[in-house]
Image (cartoon, rainbow, N blue to C red; front, side, top):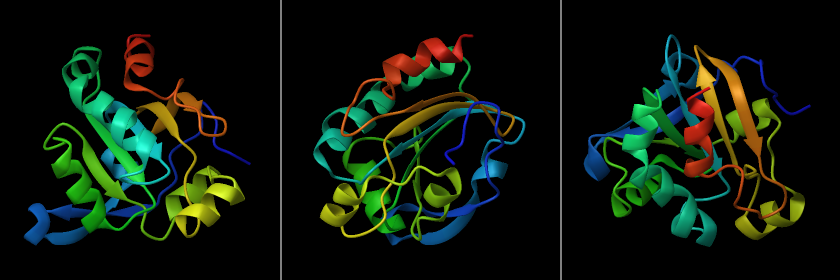
Length: 167
């Protein structure tokens, strides 16, 4: 059953490359990342895929100041990719200190949330992938949750979540 509003983030660790492309991989607890904070967690099917690269990630990077003004202390992007790919993608699109680039390398977070993409997308991308989603997370719990259907790019975009943060 997919996660829903009011649910706590699962206590799952994901990977993050620290110190740039020559840095080291560290494990990050998603639960700890949002503990005592208000922020945004958004997930994409894959780094460098068309919708994720043209629209999804760039929107969160360009709207980071609006997200901050609306109360987001942390903004994190997660995808079933390795931490080197996530770091390179973030670097290529200016994520820098605006968006935490998290790698759900083993799809453990995706599975714990129940957000696995349909089989067709998983087959095209080589294995389990996440559905596109965004959420306002407050003190480790989902305050809002936007889960896209199919390949849509509507309810999980940055401009939608800004308004949800204000509530």
